[in-house]
Length: 102
Image 1 (cartoon, one colour):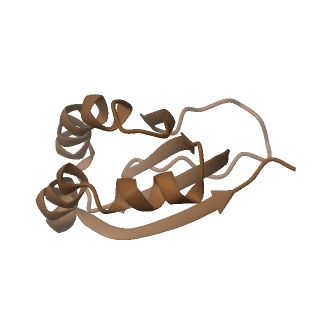
Image 2: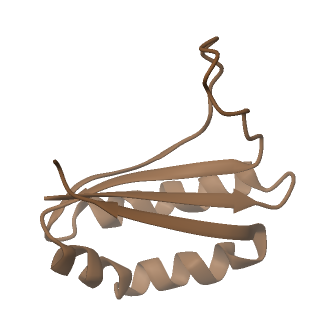
């Protein structure tokens, strides 16, 4: 199993539209072979001093896949390509971390 953290840095004011598009994609991804978890999350204030500053224009997608092969199939999945094309103009930056349990 692998964990994936995809962090989208969005252009100001684009988060709601991005999340609407993501809400259409997520049910399709949940049906993909090898998908264990796939969901969007946004920053929330915790009052914990070491927390990074809140990002009003950030979305983090938290994923779990059975294998890196399943992740690679996901990245080639046509609905994902369509989502990235649709949301591309909303995105300033994207970072991706692929992790395995230690």
